[in-house]
Every structure is written in structure tokens, then in C-alpha cells.
Length: 474
View 1 (cartoon, rainbow, N blue to C red):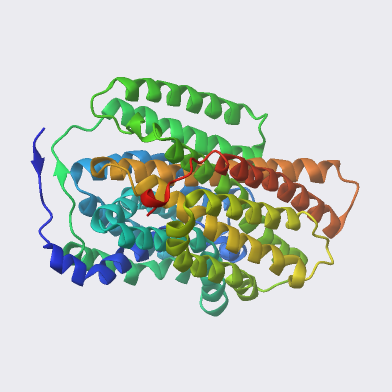
View 2 (cartoon, rainbow, N blue to C red):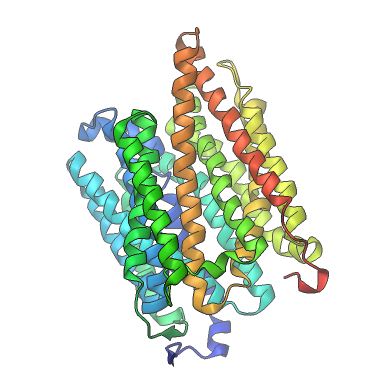
């Protein structure tokens, strides 16, 4: 197999601009993650402005996650084959144009279409962000530091989205939450071709059967989980989508095991720690997304927080995640990934379990701040080591695919978790004898209790990590 080297940036130049390169990549990642939550606090105003129905309003959020999650695998392998920087720039351009269109949307239909297009751009650019970090920062210490910052952007971005969404909605308009992507997206599109090096690219064909079955399978599952949140797990459409998704993914695995150039090389799962890390990148977001979704509603509907106050309520958590991202590189070298993942999962599970004790009379301190601090500390310890475990040792030619799988796990996990927890919320409210605010809180605490079980699952998986000897630690 012939290789074509298209990285024209000499190593000294790359080192000199390493800070700018990382800033470009992390800014893109933050934009993509931010858009999963930035519209949350703006939903009531969007509904009033564009005339969404109560059930249709949920598609402002789920249209993005559905397309993003469904196309991630394809986007990851496309970057490996056609050029990661090229996919990174093209995806950012599509995302930026879609953000502009969404901000200008004059109807519910146009806004949903813009959110779908944002998901397409995010799926094109998302896997290449992680792959570019891995292939650009080849020195072990720099790579671990870069991956830790990337993890902070990925996990802290959800909380930052609520803060930014609250600020912009309160001070300007919900449309500003989309317009803000435009200057940053343009800067990335202009700067990336000049400063971000293009890794070695190989001439190969795209695994089209795998691309079709994998993309449709993941998309069907994400749709099933999303649909279940509004129509229940007994709905025929939900069950049909779930069955189709599982069947397509079974066919996908069979194709990947036989094809010479698979969309997702199954060798990515051969290493025990990497496989366990993938599982925890699925379970962790299942627990965390419930916190963002239900706690935002608790603050606004029960605590009567304004949109701006709701956003800033998550600031301590975001600050802790970013603080831990600075400490994790040193901790990894000293202790290895297993102790960090085990400790972090315990803290995260404790924080979610604490939220299951909420009452209508609960105040921000300590009933909300305490859990947020635990989850910020735990999330910072959990997710940064997982990024390093997955990406630090993956072969360069599979970096895009590995990043695509990792982000697919995160996206599908968060969507699945939210679908399950909304179903738990509905069941709890239907069976409760309470009324008013207490009825809503009963549903939320039941959802938080279930989320705590997901978080406990990350602890059990972390226990299976193989210890890394001191000489092999990053």
C-alpha cells in the first residue's frame, strides 16, 4: 500500500505554533460540544418566537444529536482516507454556515433543518479534532497534556453551553447562541489550512457497505432512544427503529470482520484497557446528561432561576473540570489511569446519587452546589484518562476511526441515557400521588437515582482496567 505524505509543516515550525494549533482544534471541539446544550435554556423563547408545539420543541435538541451521532463513524473513517485536516475544515465550514442559517431561521421547519445541517458538519469535523491532536502532538508529555485539555473541552463544554446559552438568551436573543459560532468558525476555516499540519494520508477505498449499515444502524438507535423519550418504549415506531438499529449493527460487525479496509477496525477493541474505556465513554454520559437536562429544569421551574442564573449555577462544575484537566497529566504519570478512573467514578456516582435527595424546598447551597462539585471533580478525573487510554497508543492510521468510535459512544450514550431517564421520569410521575412541584421533583429524583446506577457502572468497568507499569505510564 502506497502512502502519500502531505504534511508540509516542518517539525520546528509545528513546535513553534503548537499552542495556536491546539487552540484551533480545541475551539472547534468546544463549538461542537457547546451546541448540544447551548439551546437548552433558550427553548421557552424559541417556542414563543417560532410557534413550536410542546412535542416538536424537543427536536431543536435531538435533531442535532441524532445526525451528529449517526454520522460520526463515517466522518471518522473519511478523515483517515481523505485527509483529516480537509474533513476538519470542511466540517467546520458546514457547521458555521448552518449556524448562520439557524440564527436567521424564521420558522420552526427552517430551524430544525439548520440543526440537522449542524449535525452533518459536526460529524465531519468531530472525529478529526481528536485525530489531529493525536497525530500532531507526538511527544508523550505534550500528547497527554493536549488530550487532557481536549477532554476538559468535551466534558466541560456541556456546562459551558448552559452558561453561554443563559448569557446570550438573557442579554441578547436565543438567535445569538447560533450566531456566536460564526466568527469562531470562520477563524478556524481560515487558520487551520495555514497552521494545522495534515497527517499522512493513504490511498484507499471507503468501506461503503460498512458505512451504510453502520451509519443507518447508529442513526436508527439514536432515533429510537430519542423517540422513546416522547412516545415511550412501547410505541411501534420506537420498537421498529430499535429492532432495525440492532439488526443493522449486527450486519455492520459482520462486514467489518471480513473487509480488508473496515470503517471501524475491530482491532481497536483488542486491547483490554481501550475496550473498557470505550464502555465508560458510553456509560459516563448516560449519567451526566440527566444532570444537565433535569437540573436545568429544576432550577428554572422549581427554583425559579432566571436563564442567566441557571447558566452560572453550573460554573463551579465547569471550573473544576478545567482545573482537573491541568492536574491529570501529572497524576497519570504518577499513578496511571486506573486509580484516577476508579476515584473519579466514585465521586461522579456520589454526586448524581446526592441529587436523588432533592425536594421542592432544596436550595442551591448545599443541595445543588455539592453534587455539582462532586461531578466536576469526578468527571475531570474520569474522562481525561479515558481519552488518553483510547488515543495515546492507537496506530496513526486508525486515529480517525478511534476518535469516531469514542465520540459515537459519547453521543449515543448521552442520547440513550436521556431516553431511558425521561421514561423513568414519566413512570414515576404517573405512579406518584403527589401534586404540583412535588410531583415533578418525584419524577426527577427517580431519574437521578437511575442515573446513579449508570455512574456506578463506570466504577465497575474502571475496576477491570489493567494496571499500567510505571515505565509505561504517559
